[in-house]
Amino acid sequence: MTPSGSNKKVSNSLVGLSFAAVLAVYSAGYARTRSAADQLEARSAERRPANPTAPQRSAPATGQSIAPEPGAAAVDATSSTGAREAPAAADRAGEKPGLIASAELIAPAANSPSPAIPETPVVSAPSAVAQPVQPTVPVAAVPVAAAPVPVAEPKPVVAAAPAPKWRDGTYTGWGTSRHGNIEAAVTIQNGKIAASRISQCLTRYSCDVIDFIIPQPVVRQSPDVDYVSRATQSADAYYYAVVEALGKAEIKSDAKVAEPK
Amino acid sequence: MSVKAADASLVRTEAVMGTLVTIQIVRGGQDADEAIERALEWFLEIEERCTRFDASSELMQLTAQSGTAVAVSPILFEAVRFALMVAEESGGAFDPTVGHRMAGLGFNREHRTGEIAPITATPAADVSYRDVVLNEKNQTILLRRPLTLDLGAVAKGLAVDTAVRELEPFEDFAIDAGGDLYLGGLNAKGEPWSVGIRHPRRDGELIDTLLVSGQAVCTSGDYERQTSAGHHLLDPRTGASTHAVASATVVAPAALLADALATAAFVLGPQEGIPFLTGLGVEGLIITPDMQRHETPDLKKLLRRA
Image (spheres, rainbow over the protein chains, first blue to last red):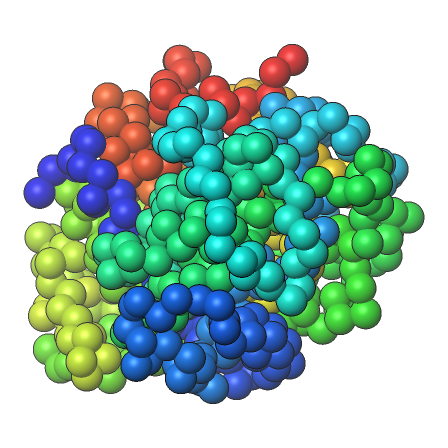
Protein backbone atom coordinates (compact mmCIF):
# COMPACT_ATOMS: atom_id res chain seq x y z
CA MET A 1 0.00 0.00 0.00
CA THR A 2 1.35 3.38 -0.89
CA PRO A 3 0.59 6.60 0.86
CA SER A 4 -2.59 7.81 -0.70
CA GLY A 5 -2.92 11.42 -1.55
CA SER A 6 -6.42 12.64 -1.32
CA ASN A 7 -8.78 10.14 0.13
CA LYS A 8 -10.89 12.08 2.58
CA LYS A 9 -12.33 8.93 4.06
CA VAL A 10 -8.88 7.85 5.06
CA SER A 11 -8.33 11.11 6.84
CA ASN A 12 -11.48 10.75 8.84
CA SER A 13 -10.66 7.24 9.85
CA LEU A 14 -7.15 8.06 11.00
CA VAL A 15 -8.14 11.19 12.87
CA GLY A 16 -11.18 9.41 14.27
CA LEU A 17 -9.09 6.45 15.25
CA SER A 18 -6.68 8.61 17.19
CA PHE A 19 -9.59 10.01 19.20
CA ALA A 20 -11.05 6.55 19.65
CA ALA A 21 -7.74 5.19 20.92
CA VAL A 22 -7.35 7.98 23.44
CA LEU A 23 -10.92 7.54 24.65
CA ALA A 24 -10.54 3.80 24.99
CA VAL A 25 -7.44 4.23 27.11
CA TYR A 26 -8.91 7.06 29.11
CA SER A 27 -12.14 5.28 29.86
CA ALA A 28 -10.37 2.08 30.82
CA GLY A 29 -8.36 4.00 33.36
CA TYR A 30 -11.01 6.36 34.56
CA ALA A 31 -11.39 4.65 37.92
CA ARG A 32 -8.09 6.24 38.79
CA THR A 33 -9.38 9.62 37.90
CA ARG A 34 -12.65 9.41 39.66
CA SER A 35 -13.06 13.02 40.55
CA ALA A 36 -12.82 14.09 36.96
CA ALA A 37 -15.36 11.45 36.15
CA ASP A 38 -17.76 12.69 38.78
CA GLN A 39 -17.45 16.14 37.42
CA LEU A 40 -18.43 14.92 34.04
CA GLU A 41 -21.25 12.91 35.36
CA ALA A 42 -22.65 15.98 37.01
CA ARG A 43 -22.36 17.80 33.75
CA SER A 44 -24.06 15.20 31.67
CA ALA A 45 -26.83 14.93 34.22
CA GLU A 46 -27.61 18.58 33.86
CA ARG A 47 -26.99 18.39 30.19
CA ARG A 48 -30.50 17.89 29.03
CA PRO A 49 -33.69 18.32 30.91
CA ALA A 50 -36.53 16.41 29.36
CA ASN A 51 -37.49 18.26 26.27
CA PRO A 52 -41.23 18.74 26.55
CA THR A 53 -41.70 20.79 23.42
CA ALA A 54 -39.68 18.56 21.21
CA PRO A 55 -41.82 16.95 18.58
CA GLN A 56 -41.42 13.24 18.98
CA ARG A 57 -41.24 12.46 15.34
CA SER A 58 -38.08 10.50 15.74
CA ALA A 59 -37.56 7.38 17.71
CA PRO A 60 -40.42 8.17 20.02
CA ALA A 61 -40.12 5.08 22.09
CA THR A 62 -36.56 5.67 22.99
CA GLY A 63 -36.67 9.41 23.31
CA GLN A 64 -36.45 10.42 26.94
CA SER A 65 -35.62 7.09 28.37
CA ILE A 66 -32.07 6.98 27.24
CA ALA A 67 -30.08 8.52 29.98
CA PRO A 68 -26.37 8.41 29.59
CA GLU A 69 -25.23 5.12 31.04
CA PRO A 70 -23.41 5.56 34.31
CA GLY A 71 -20.23 4.17 32.92
CA ALA A 72 -20.38 6.51 30.02
CA ALA A 73 -20.20 9.51 32.23
CA ALA A 74 -16.52 9.13 32.65
CA VAL A 75 -16.00 9.16 28.99
CA ASP A 76 -18.37 12.00 28.56
CA ALA A 77 -15.80 13.88 30.48
CA THR A 78 -14.52 14.66 27.12
CA SER A 79 -17.64 16.65 26.53
CA SER A 80 -16.47 19.35 28.79
CA THR A 81 -16.01 21.73 25.93
CA GLY A 82 -19.58 21.57 24.91
CA ALA A 83 -20.91 21.58 28.41
CA ARG A 84 -19.32 24.72 29.52
CA GLU A 85 -21.44 27.71 30.23
CA ALA A 86 -22.40 29.79 27.31
CA PRO A 87 -20.77 32.96 28.63
CA ALA A 88 -17.49 31.20 28.96
CA ALA A 89 -17.75 30.09 25.40
CA ALA A 90 -18.61 33.59 24.36
CA ASP A 91 -15.48 34.88 25.98
CA ARG A 92 -13.61 32.81 23.56
CA ALA A 93 -15.46 34.02 20.56
CA GLY A 94 -12.51 36.14 19.59
CA GLU A 95 -10.48 33.00 19.30
CA LYS A 96 -8.90 32.93 15.95
CA PRO A 97 -5.51 32.44 14.56
CA GLY A 98 -3.72 35.35 13.09
CA LEU A 99 -4.30 37.81 15.88
CA ILE A 100 -1.16 38.37 17.82
CA ALA A 101 0.89 36.42 20.23
CA SER A 102 4.20 36.17 21.82
CA ALA A 103 6.25 33.05 21.72
CA GLU A 104 5.47 31.00 24.76
CA LEU A 105 6.47 27.61 23.61
CA ILE A 106 9.26 26.50 21.44
CA ALA A 107 8.26 23.32 19.75
CA PRO A 108 11.19 21.00 19.50
CA ALA A 109 13.32 22.49 22.21
CA ALA A 110 12.99 19.22 23.98
CA ASN A 111 14.90 20.00 27.06
CA SER A 112 13.96 23.52 27.89
CA PRO A 113 12.50 23.17 31.33
CA SER A 114 9.42 25.27 31.00
CA PRO A 115 7.74 27.64 28.64
CA ALA A 116 8.19 31.27 29.42
CA ILE A 117 5.31 32.54 31.43
CA PRO A 118 3.42 35.38 29.91
CA GLU A 119 3.35 38.30 32.23
CA THR A 120 0.17 40.18 31.59
CA PRO A 121 -3.23 38.56 31.59
CA VAL A 122 -4.65 40.99 29.08
CA VAL A 123 -7.97 40.24 27.48
CA SER A 124 -8.11 40.71 23.79
CA ALA A 125 -10.15 43.46 22.26
CA PRO A 126 -13.86 42.85 21.94
CA SER A 127 -13.79 43.70 18.28
CA ALA A 128 -12.26 40.34 17.55
CA VAL A 129 -15.59 38.62 17.66
CA ALA A 130 -16.15 38.84 13.95
CA GLN A 131 -15.81 35.31 12.77
CA PRO A 132 -14.53 32.59 14.98
CA VAL A 133 -12.51 30.18 13.00
CA GLN A 134 -11.23 26.82 14.01
CA PRO A 135 -7.56 26.79 13.23
CA THR A 136 -7.61 23.83 10.95
CA VAL A 137 -10.89 24.29 9.28
CA PRO A 138 -11.75 27.79 8.42
CA VAL A 139 -15.46 28.12 7.92
CA ALA A 140 -14.98 31.36 6.14
CA ALA A 141 -17.50 30.66 3.49
CA VAL A 142 -20.35 28.61 4.71
CA PRO A 143 -23.14 30.15 2.79
CA VAL A 144 -25.40 27.20 3.24
CA ALA A 145 -27.88 29.35 5.01
CA ALA A 146 -31.27 29.19 3.52
CA ALA A 147 -33.64 32.05 4.09
CA PRO A 148 -34.24 32.55 7.76
CA VAL A 149 -37.01 30.34 8.91
CA PRO A 150 -39.77 32.28 10.56
CA VAL A 151 -40.69 30.44 13.65
CA ALA A 152 -44.37 30.62 14.20
CA GLU A 153 -44.79 27.98 16.79
CA PRO A 154 -44.49 28.72 20.49
CA LYS A 155 -40.88 29.07 21.30
CA PRO A 156 -39.46 26.00 22.95
CA VAL A 157 -37.65 27.85 25.64
CA VAL A 158 -34.74 26.09 27.20
CA ALA A 159 -34.51 26.76 30.88
CA ALA A 160 -30.90 27.82 30.83
CA ALA A 161 -31.08 30.05 27.80
CA PRO A 162 -32.70 33.44 28.05
CA ALA A 163 -34.35 35.00 25.03
CA PRO A 164 -31.86 34.09 22.37
CA LYS A 165 -29.76 36.97 21.23
CA TRP A 166 -27.36 35.83 18.62
CA ARG A 167 -25.15 37.80 16.37
CA ASP A 168 -25.50 37.13 12.64
CA GLY A 169 -22.80 35.02 11.12
CA THR A 170 -21.63 31.44 11.00
CA TYR A 171 -20.16 29.92 14.14
CA THR A 172 -18.62 26.58 14.80
CA GLY A 173 -18.42 24.51 17.91
CA TRP A 174 -17.13 21.10 18.89
CA GLY A 175 -18.90 18.37 20.74
CA THR A 176 -17.11 15.28 21.90
CA SER A 177 -18.19 11.78 22.65
CA ARG A 178 -16.55 8.52 23.40
CA HIS A 179 -16.83 7.64 19.74
CA GLY A 180 -15.19 10.80 18.53
CA ASN A 181 -15.90 14.46 17.93
CA ILE A 182 -18.40 16.41 15.88
CA GLU A 183 -18.07 19.98 14.73
CA ALA A 184 -21.27 21.91 14.05
CA ALA A 185 -21.54 25.07 11.96
CA VAL A 186 -24.50 27.21 12.95
CA THR A 187 -25.59 30.14 10.82
CA ILE A 188 -27.46 33.00 12.45
CA GLN A 189 -29.48 35.32 10.25
CA ASN A 190 -31.60 38.13 11.60
CA GLY A 191 -30.91 36.86 15.08
CA LYS A 192 -32.35 33.43 14.39
CA ILE A 193 -30.80 30.07 13.73
CA ALA A 194 -31.09 29.85 9.97
CA ALA A 195 -29.01 26.75 9.41
CA SER A 196 -27.19 24.15 11.40
CA ARG A 197 -25.06 21.42 9.98
CA ILE A 198 -22.22 19.07 10.77
CA SER A 199 -19.07 20.60 9.38
CA GLN A 200 -16.75 17.83 10.54
CA CYS A 201 -17.64 14.33 11.54
CA LEU A 202 -14.76 12.65 13.33
CA THR A 203 -16.76 9.97 15.02
CA ARG A 204 -15.93 6.35 14.64
CA TYR A 205 -19.32 5.77 13.07
CA SER A 206 -20.82 7.68 10.19
CA CYS A 207 -22.73 10.80 11.14
CA ASP A 208 -25.51 9.64 8.82
CA VAL A 209 -27.16 7.94 11.76
CA ILE A 210 -28.11 11.28 13.21
CA ASP A 211 -29.04 12.92 9.92
CA PHE A 212 -32.58 13.61 10.92
CA ILE A 213 -31.73 15.60 14.03
CA ILE A 214 -29.37 17.93 12.21
CA PRO A 215 -32.02 20.47 11.19
CA GLN A 216 -33.75 20.40 14.57
CA PRO A 217 -31.92 23.44 15.97
CA VAL A 218 -33.43 25.49 13.12
CA VAL A 219 -36.95 24.31 13.81
CA ARG A 220 -36.59 24.62 17.56
CA GLN A 221 -34.32 27.67 17.69
CA SER A 222 -32.35 25.87 20.36
CA PRO A 223 -29.66 23.22 20.57
CA ASP A 224 -32.18 20.75 21.96
CA VAL A 225 -32.11 17.84 19.59
CA ASP A 226 -33.74 14.50 20.07
CA TYR A 227 -32.01 11.56 21.54
CA VAL A 228 -31.22 8.97 18.94
CA SER A 229 -31.52 5.37 19.81
CA ARG A 230 -28.22 3.55 19.31
CA ALA A 231 -26.53 6.85 18.53
CA THR A 232 -26.89 8.67 21.81
CA GLN A 233 -23.22 9.58 21.85
CA SER A 234 -23.28 11.13 18.42
CA ALA A 235 -26.50 12.98 19.17
CA ASP A 236 -25.03 14.33 22.38
CA ALA A 237 -21.87 15.39 20.60
CA TYR A 238 -23.94 17.29 18.07
CA TYR A 239 -25.92 18.93 20.86
CA TYR A 240 -22.73 20.04 22.60
CA ALA A 241 -21.30 21.29 19.33
CA VAL A 242 -24.38 23.44 18.68
CA VAL A 243 -24.31 24.70 22.27
CA GLU A 244 -20.74 25.79 21.83
CA ALA A 245 -21.40 27.43 18.48
CA LEU A 246 -24.37 29.34 19.90
CA GLY A 247 -22.21 30.36 22.84
CA LYS A 248 -19.89 32.04 20.41
CA ALA A 249 -22.79 33.74 18.68
CA GLU A 250 -24.31 35.07 21.86
CA ILE A 251 -24.53 38.82 22.16
CA LYS A 252 -23.69 39.99 25.60
CA SER A 253 -25.82 42.78 26.95
CA ASP A 254 -22.70 44.35 28.31
CA ALA A 255 -20.63 45.38 25.33
CA LYS A 256 -17.39 44.71 27.11
CA VAL A 257 -15.80 41.36 26.78
CA ALA A 258 -16.10 39.47 30.00
CA GLU A 259 -13.07 39.11 32.15
CA PRO A 260 -11.32 35.83 32.37
CA LYS A 261 -12.82 33.93 35.21
CA MET B 1 6.43 21.19 42.29
CA SER B 2 4.07 23.49 40.58
CA VAL B 3 4.80 27.13 40.35
CA LYS B 4 2.20 29.80 40.58
CA ALA B 5 3.10 32.48 38.11
CA ALA B 6 2.33 36.14 38.59
CA ASP B 7 -0.57 35.85 36.16
CA ALA B 8 -2.18 33.07 38.21
CA SER B 9 -1.30 30.37 35.72
CA LEU B 10 0.00 27.14 37.14
CA VAL B 11 3.13 25.57 35.65
CA ARG B 12 4.70 22.28 36.53
CA THR B 13 7.59 20.33 35.03
CA GLU B 14 8.43 16.69 35.66
CA ALA B 15 10.92 14.29 34.14
CA VAL B 16 9.00 11.39 32.60
CA MET B 17 9.27 9.27 29.47
CA GLY B 18 12.88 10.18 29.00
CA THR B 19 12.08 13.82 28.63
CA LEU B 20 10.76 16.83 30.51
CA VAL B 21 7.02 17.26 30.58
CA THR B 22 5.70 20.73 31.29
CA ILE B 23 2.05 21.41 31.94
CA GLN B 24 0.62 24.89 32.19
CA ILE B 25 -2.94 25.75 33.16
CA VAL B 26 -3.71 29.36 32.41
CA ARG B 27 -6.19 29.97 35.18
CA GLY B 28 -5.27 27.50 37.85
CA GLY B 29 -8.33 26.98 40.02
CA GLN B 30 -8.43 24.95 43.17
CA ASP B 31 -8.52 21.63 41.34
CA ALA B 32 -5.72 22.47 38.96
CA ASP B 33 -3.00 20.85 41.00
CA GLU B 34 -4.94 17.60 41.19
CA ALA B 35 -5.65 17.64 37.48
CA ILE B 36 -1.97 18.13 36.70
CA GLU B 37 -1.20 15.26 39.05
CA ARG B 38 -3.61 12.99 37.20
CA ALA B 39 -2.27 14.13 33.86
CA LEU B 40 1.27 13.24 34.89
CA GLU B 41 0.12 9.88 36.19
CA TRP B 42 -0.97 9.03 32.68
CA PHE B 43 2.56 9.65 31.46
CA LEU B 44 3.94 7.32 34.10
CA GLU B 45 1.42 4.59 33.50
CA ILE B 46 1.74 4.65 29.73
CA GLU B 47 5.52 4.74 29.93
CA GLU B 48 5.51 1.80 32.32
CA ARG B 49 3.56 -0.32 29.87
CA CYS B 50 5.09 0.79 26.59
CA THR B 51 8.78 1.29 27.26
CA ARG B 52 11.33 -0.94 25.59
CA PHE B 53 13.96 0.04 28.14
CA ASP B 54 12.60 -2.17 30.88
CA ALA B 55 12.45 -5.94 30.45
CA SER B 56 9.50 -6.12 32.82
CA SER B 57 7.32 -3.67 30.90
CA GLU B 58 4.19 -5.08 29.34
CA LEU B 59 5.62 -4.32 25.92
CA MET B 60 8.78 -6.31 26.57
CA GLN B 61 6.77 -9.16 28.07
CA LEU B 62 4.85 -9.28 24.86
CA THR B 63 8.07 -9.18 22.87
CA ALA B 64 9.34 -12.19 24.77
CA GLN B 65 6.35 -14.27 23.69
CA SER B 66 6.39 -14.16 19.92
CA GLY B 67 4.26 -16.85 18.32
CA THR B 68 1.61 -16.63 21.04
CA ALA B 69 -1.46 -14.42 21.17
CA VAL B 70 -0.99 -12.43 24.37
CA ALA B 71 -3.81 -10.63 26.18
CA VAL B 72 -2.76 -7.05 26.82
CA SER B 73 -3.99 -3.93 28.58
CA PRO B 74 -6.11 -1.37 26.75
CA ILE B 75 -3.14 1.00 26.74
CA LEU B 76 -0.86 -1.40 24.92
CA PHE B 77 -3.60 -2.63 22.62
CA GLU B 78 -4.67 0.83 21.53
CA ALA B 79 -1.09 2.03 21.12
CA VAL B 80 -0.22 -0.91 18.90
CA ARG B 81 -3.46 -0.72 16.98
CA PHE B 82 -2.90 2.93 16.20
CA ALA B 83 0.72 2.34 15.23
CA LEU B 84 -0.35 -0.39 12.80
CA MET B 85 -3.00 1.86 11.32
CA VAL B 86 -0.45 4.59 10.62
CA ALA B 87 1.96 1.98 9.24
CA GLU B 88 -0.74 0.84 6.87
CA GLU B 89 -1.69 4.37 5.79
CA SER B 90 1.91 5.40 5.24
CA GLY B 91 2.81 2.32 3.25
CA GLY B 92 5.31 1.29 5.91
CA ALA B 93 7.13 4.63 6.14
CA PHE B 94 6.09 4.54 9.77
CA ASP B 95 6.65 1.09 11.21
CA PRO B 96 6.66 0.20 14.93
CA THR B 97 8.72 -2.93 14.27
CA VAL B 98 11.88 -0.93 13.54
CA GLY B 99 12.77 -1.37 17.23
CA HIS B 100 15.51 -3.91 16.65
CA ARG B 101 17.14 -1.83 13.96
CA MET B 102 17.28 1.14 16.25
CA ALA B 103 19.05 -0.97 18.84
CA GLY B 104 21.45 -2.11 16.13
CA LEU B 105 22.35 1.48 15.33
CA GLY B 106 23.14 2.23 18.94
CA PHE B 107 19.74 3.53 20.01
CA ASN B 108 19.58 1.05 22.82
CA ARG B 109 20.17 3.60 25.51
CA GLU B 110 17.47 5.56 27.20
CA HIS B 111 18.87 8.93 26.37
CA ARG B 112 18.10 10.71 29.63
CA THR B 113 18.88 8.05 32.20
CA GLY B 114 21.38 6.05 30.21
CA GLU B 115 19.47 2.81 30.78
CA ILE B 116 20.31 0.14 28.26
CA ALA B 117 17.51 -1.60 26.44
CA PRO B 118 17.35 -5.33 27.09
CA ILE B 119 18.80 -7.50 24.37
CA THR B 120 16.23 -9.46 22.43
CA ALA B 121 16.52 -12.19 19.84
CA THR B 122 17.68 -10.83 16.52
CA PRO B 123 14.68 -10.66 14.24
CA ALA B 124 14.68 -11.62 10.60
CA ALA B 125 15.71 -8.76 8.36
CA ASP B 126 12.34 -8.57 6.68
CA VAL B 127 10.04 -8.30 9.69
CA SER B 128 7.50 -5.53 9.37
CA TYR B 129 4.29 -4.31 10.94
CA ARG B 130 2.53 -7.05 8.99
CA ASP B 131 3.97 -9.55 11.46
CA VAL B 132 1.85 -8.04 14.21
CA VAL B 133 -1.68 -9.42 14.44
CA LEU B 134 -4.40 -7.96 16.61
CA ASN B 135 -7.50 -9.69 17.85
CA GLU B 136 -9.93 -6.98 18.79
CA LYS B 137 -12.47 -9.26 20.36
CA ASN B 138 -10.03 -10.92 22.72
CA GLN B 139 -7.78 -7.87 23.03
CA THR B 140 -4.74 -9.93 22.20
CA ILE B 141 -1.60 -9.21 20.22
CA LEU B 142 0.29 -11.87 18.32
CA LEU B 143 3.83 -11.35 17.07
CA ARG B 144 4.15 -13.82 14.26
CA ARG B 145 7.93 -13.70 14.35
CA PRO B 146 10.45 -12.49 16.92
CA LEU B 147 10.55 -8.71 16.76
CA THR B 148 10.80 -5.63 18.96
CA LEU B 149 8.05 -3.06 18.92
CA ASP B 150 9.08 0.55 19.32
CA LEU B 151 6.10 2.51 20.53
CA GLY B 152 8.10 5.59 21.48
CA ALA B 153 6.32 8.05 19.22
CA VAL B 154 2.87 6.62 19.79
CA ALA B 155 3.18 6.23 23.55
CA LYS B 156 4.24 9.81 24.12
CA GLY B 157 1.45 11.10 21.91
CA LEU B 158 -1.06 8.89 23.68
CA ALA B 159 0.11 10.18 27.05
CA VAL B 160 -0.26 13.78 25.92
CA ASP B 161 -3.75 13.10 24.60
CA THR B 162 -4.97 11.37 27.75
CA ALA B 163 -3.46 14.19 29.80
CA VAL B 164 -5.48 16.57 27.63
CA ARG B 165 -8.63 14.81 28.81
CA GLU B 166 -7.71 15.57 32.40
CA LEU B 167 -7.02 19.21 31.66
CA GLU B 168 -9.95 19.94 29.39
CA PRO B 169 -12.15 21.30 32.19
CA PHE B 170 -9.68 24.17 32.49
CA GLU B 171 -10.08 25.07 28.81
CA ASP B 172 -6.86 27.03 28.47
CA PHE B 173 -3.72 24.98 28.98
CA ALA B 174 -0.53 23.76 27.33
CA ILE B 175 1.38 20.51 27.50
CA ASP B 176 4.97 20.23 26.30
CA ALA B 177 6.32 16.71 26.39
CA GLY B 178 9.77 17.18 24.95
CA GLY B 179 8.56 18.67 21.70
CA ASP B 180 5.22 16.90 21.59
CA LEU B 181 2.92 19.80 22.25
CA TYR B 182 -0.78 20.20 22.80
CA LEU B 183 -2.23 23.66 23.11
CA GLY B 184 -5.70 23.90 24.58
CA GLY B 185 -7.80 27.04 24.27
CA LEU B 186 -5.99 30.34 24.52
CA ASN B 187 -2.95 31.69 26.32
CA ALA B 188 -3.04 34.07 29.28
CA LYS B 189 -3.48 36.99 26.93
CA GLY B 190 -6.56 35.43 25.40
CA GLU B 191 -4.74 34.71 22.15
CA PRO B 192 -3.99 31.47 20.33
CA TRP B 193 -0.83 29.85 21.61
CA SER B 194 2.25 30.68 19.72
CA VAL B 195 4.54 27.77 18.91
CA GLY B 196 8.02 28.26 17.57
CA ILE B 197 9.47 25.73 15.13
CA ARG B 198 13.15 25.32 15.77
CA HIS B 199 15.61 25.97 12.99
CA PRO B 200 17.02 22.54 12.14
CA ARG B 201 20.54 23.84 11.69
CA ARG B 202 20.93 26.92 13.84
CA ASP B 203 20.62 26.39 17.55
CA GLY B 204 18.37 28.80 19.33
CA GLU B 205 16.77 30.12 16.16
CA LEU B 206 13.22 29.62 14.97
CA ILE B 207 12.39 28.89 11.39
CA ASP B 208 8.74 29.76 11.88
CA THR B 209 6.07 30.47 14.44
CA LEU B 210 2.62 28.91 14.38
CA LEU B 211 -0.54 30.13 16.10
CA VAL B 212 -2.39 27.16 17.45
CA SER B 213 -5.50 26.47 19.52
CA GLY B 214 -6.95 23.08 20.33
CA GLN B 215 -4.28 21.25 18.32
CA ALA B 216 -1.16 19.22 18.81
CA VAL B 217 2.17 20.11 17.22
CA CYS B 218 5.05 17.72 16.82
CA THR B 219 8.40 18.00 15.07
CA SER B 220 10.75 15.20 14.06
CA GLY B 221 14.25 16.43 13.42
CA ASP B 222 17.54 14.90 12.35
CA TYR B 223 19.24 17.02 15.02
CA GLU B 224 17.86 14.98 17.90
CA ARG B 225 19.59 11.92 19.23
CA GLN B 226 22.34 11.30 16.71
CA THR B 227 24.74 8.39 16.85
CA SER B 228 27.71 7.79 14.58
CA ALA B 229 25.53 5.60 12.42
CA GLY B 230 22.95 8.33 11.89
CA HIS B 231 20.01 9.96 13.62
CA HIS B 232 17.12 8.19 15.30
CA LEU B 233 14.68 8.25 12.42
CA LEU B 234 15.08 5.23 10.24
CA ASP B 235 13.47 4.39 6.99
CA PRO B 236 11.78 1.12 7.87
CA ARG B 237 11.98 0.16 4.24
CA THR B 238 15.80 0.27 4.19
CA GLY B 239 16.84 0.18 7.85
CA ALA B 240 19.12 3.17 7.45
CA SER B 241 18.78 6.75 8.61
CA THR B 242 16.98 8.92 6.11
CA HIS B 243 18.74 11.89 4.59
CA ALA B 244 16.18 13.84 2.60
CA VAL B 245 14.69 15.77 5.50
CA ALA B 246 16.11 17.98 8.25
CA SER B 247 12.84 18.37 10.12
CA ALA B 248 9.17 17.55 9.70
CA THR B 249 6.47 19.31 11.72
CA VAL B 250 2.83 18.22 11.87
CA VAL B 251 -0.16 20.05 13.34
CA ALA B 252 -3.08 17.71 14.05
CA PRO B 253 -6.06 17.41 16.41
CA ALA B 254 -4.32 14.78 18.54
CA ALA B 255 -0.71 14.40 19.67
CA LEU B 256 -0.87 10.70 18.86
CA LEU B 257 -1.52 11.61 15.28
CA ALA B 258 0.92 14.53 15.11
CA ASP B 259 3.81 12.48 16.46
CA ALA B 260 3.27 9.41 14.28
CA LEU B 261 2.67 11.49 11.17
CA ALA B 262 5.72 13.68 11.79
CA THR B 263 7.80 10.52 11.86
CA ALA B 264 6.13 9.21 8.71
CA ALA B 265 6.54 12.53 6.89
CA PHE B 266 10.19 12.64 7.88
CA VAL B 267 10.75 9.25 6.30
CA LEU B 268 8.61 9.91 3.23
CA GLY B 269 10.40 13.17 2.41
CA PRO B 270 8.79 16.26 0.90
CA GLN B 271 7.65 14.79 -2.42
CA GLU B 272 5.58 12.04 -0.87
CA GLY B 273 5.16 13.51 2.59
CA ILE B 274 3.31 16.71 1.78
CA PRO B 275 0.58 15.04 -0.34
CA PHE B 276 0.33 12.35 2.33
CA LEU B 277 -0.33 14.89 5.10
CA THR B 278 -2.67 16.93 2.94
CA GLY B 279 -4.67 13.82 2.13
CA LEU B 280 -5.08 13.09 5.81
CA GLY B 281 -6.40 16.57 6.48
CA VAL B 282 -3.55 17.67 8.75
CA GLU B 283 -1.03 20.47 8.29
CA GLY B 284 2.69 20.00 7.95
CA LEU B 285 6.00 21.70 7.24
CA ILE B 286 8.99 19.78 5.94
CA ILE B 287 12.46 21.36 5.81
CA THR B 288 15.14 19.70 3.71
CA PRO B 289 18.84 19.72 4.64
CA ASP B 290 19.41 22.51 2.10
CA MET B 291 16.78 24.54 4.01
CA GLN B 292 14.06 24.35 1.39
CA ARG B 293 10.56 24.61 2.79
CA HIS B 294 7.71 22.37 1.77
CA GLU B 295 4.34 22.91 3.38
CA THR B 296 0.74 21.77 3.13
CA PRO B 297 -1.51 24.29 1.38
CA ASP B 298 -3.34 25.46 4.51
CA LEU B 299 -0.33 25.73 6.80
CA LYS B 300 -0.08 29.41 5.97
CA LYS B 301 -3.28 30.00 7.90
CA LEU B 302 -1.44 28.98 11.05
CA LEU B 303 1.72 30.95 10.40
CA ARG B 304 2.20 34.06 12.42
CA ARG B 305 2.41 37.05 10.17
CA ALA B 306 5.25 39.36 10.90
